[in-house]
Picture 1 (tube, rainbow, N blue to C red):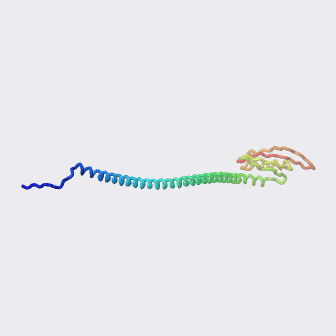
Picture 2 (picture 1 turned 30 degrees about the vertical axis):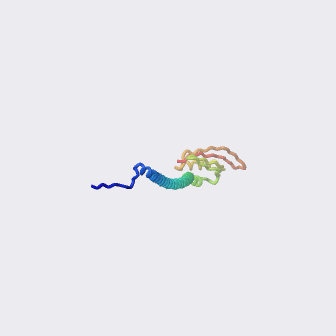
Length: 185
């Protein structure tokens, strides 16, 4: 049999490993540098995305603040308009009440005007609720009594009473200052 003999001297394994260690170490350092670079790039891209998101959220927050200010202004305007409407409603109610009172007193006033003789002058006619007051001057006491009785005969008036405040005469003519108190039905 033949054996092969290796005449080329071979280096021992330890020396081969010693020669490979700087290459392996360099490759590992290069790999770590590339990995670190990629990690930094990924972090920068995330940071950029987060900054964009923060800017967008801040913009939305400023828009929301502006909208809140506009809403507050609109609420103030709405409250002012509601107050104006309430005030106008109260004015309308008051005016309609006055209109209703005018109708209430128009019939008694027209009846008093139709019954009033020529010898009686009214200075003031006033109504407060269902009570009224007539103040004036009469030239004849009998005409004053007839006027008061005619008022008592009408169904619109009740409790008509006469009060003479002053009775004077000059030049053969009598002047009677009177007040008639009446109540409306």
